[in-house]
Structures are given as structure tokens and as C-alpha cells.
Length: 397
Figure 1: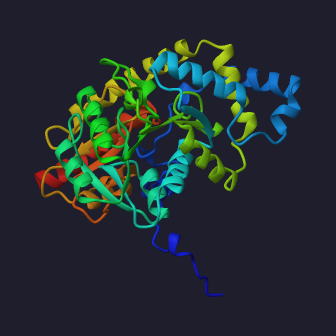
Figure 2 (figure 1 turned 90 degrees about the vertical axis):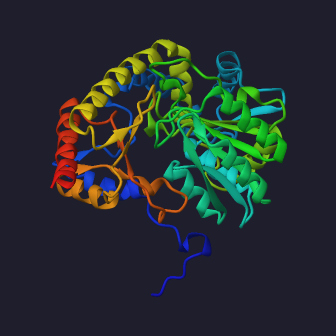
Figure 3 (figure 1 turned 120 degrees about the vertical axis):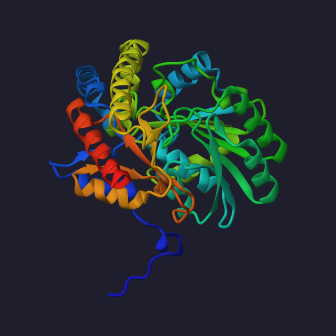
């Protein structure tokens, strides 16, 4: 049989991260490539109690079909919580529950973009979102990153040169993969540029609650008086990714189209998972839970950065972080980054090559991403020591 694939998927490639996971499945391999929460972070006992209560007292509610927009009590909780805690949500906004935050990227693109339209992305950016955008045959244009977020001059140049821009995609807090946080000044400037050029902003914020040092910076969506910003949130990093519960706060007119698109994809997000999230949020102290997560990640990130300073300096530099799950490491000029990552795999250490996060994977890149949250301290120590030995062999030979 000769298979004929759709034009939408003919040129799509497997996620580099998912491909690396194949190596990481080897029990001898130290995986610094995942993006998973720490095993210590899961509220297992609490989720078991909530789930038992649901299946004992309201089993049909959890097992029957539900509405596409999402479990009403959870939407009500989020509407109130986001407004009180983050000043997000206007009268023209509403909340949609999605199957993970990844579905927000899918529904946004499906609702707003035609083939050939342009999406402006941070360069580098999250590969999962980039592949979602690519699947709709939009054209991606990367905007280089500075220490405090997108280069505003490059962003305006792109907005001026590209007449078919539909939205700007940004991860403003502890960006994946760089760990960079966009400054408040730049958030206001990005919003002003979006308003000036009449384009939307897709603000992806899976890591914002995981700030363990520094000052909180309000979301771009908190500025939104004009219905320009579509905000994406998730419970994957703060409760459990296996539940696959995310959400969007979006202008109602846009959300109505997203709902229609979602009906054609999965009818509704797993209702049992939604009820578990809602029960956890209402039954337990969510702020105390977040504080515990921040303590875990504060300690693990500090330990990891100390290891990087000890074993990788002065040859490999990295961007220090105040939150999130990732560190962005940069090799010296002249060192072949893909070859370095391949050699690391042969030594049983997996990292993610940085070009996987670019809008054009053929562009030169000297960086790679590591995740510190998933490995044990022993794995971190051994893996980073191996990387340090590898770079010294290359540079000092």
C-alpha cells in the first residue's frame, strides 16, 4: 500500500524531545531532556481522596458526557481566581477548559489562521507549540530574545514587514527553553505594538506559578482593555500533567469559535479530570500547595546551578533562573552543538539540542536545554559531571 498523507502533515517531523525520550527510556540513561514536574511535587494523597469522593458520591457526573466549555464549577472557580489573583478577565472575556494547554495553541490557530498567515514567535520557543502552528501551514517568523524578553525593535520590524500576522506567541514567564522572563516594561510595549498593528497575543503561562525568587510580574493579559490577548494556563505543572487539564481566558467572540473547533476534536475535556482539579482547588489550600512546589524547585534549581558552575564553567554558560523548570546552556563558539548532544547521548546523558526550538531548525545554534526538575540529585550530579568532562575533552584537546 502506498500511503498518501495530507499536505498539512507531509512535512511535519517528530518532536525532537519525544525522539530523545526513546533514548531516555533506557534505565542507564540520565535524562536531562524531559519537561516533567518533580515526582515530589504530585499531591498523590489529596488527589486520591478527591477522586474517591467523586466516584463514591457523584459517579455519573464524572462518567457521563459533559459540555464542551468545561465543568461549570471549575470554570467559575477559575473566573474568580484569575480575576482576584492575577487581575485577568474582563466583561468581554470567558473561560474555556481544554485538554492541556497544548490544545489552546491548536484551537487558537485553527480559529484565527488561514494557510499562509504568519505567527510571530520568540526565537527560540517551545517546540510543541511550534509544531502545532506548523500543522496549520502557517508561516513562522522568529523574533530574537534578549535578557528581558523579545527584542522590541525586531518585533516591530516583523509586524511592519508581515501584513498577514495573526498573533504574537509568547511565554513571558521562565520561557521554555531559555528560562527568560519578560520585563514589565516589555510586556507593556508588546501589548502596545499588538494594539498598534491590530494583531492578537497568545500568552502562554504554564510556569508563572513556579516563581521561587524575584518579584512577581503581572501578566500581559492583565493589561487587556481591548480584547487583544488570549491567555493560556495549565494545571500540568502545578497539580499533575496526566490529568490533561488546561484552560484559556479569551474574548467571548474568539472563544465561541474555539468551542466549535473543540467540539470537532474531543467533544469535551475529560470530565473526571476536571472534577478532580476543581475538588483539589476547593478542598485544599492551593496557595500552600504552590508554596511547597516553589520550595522544591528553589532547592533543586540552586543545586543544579551550583553543579553547572562547578563542572561546566568556564566553557559552558547558562541563563540563571528565578522559576520554571529549564536551564539554557550555551557552548563556546566553534563547538558543534548537535555533535556535542549526540556524544552526550552515547555517554548516557540526554539533553535537548537548541535548534529543535527554532522556527528554522537549520539555523545555527550553540545552545542546548536541560531540565532539572525530573532527575534525582544523584542523576543531576552524575549527568552534569559527564557533560563537563565531555566539553573539556573537546575544548582542551
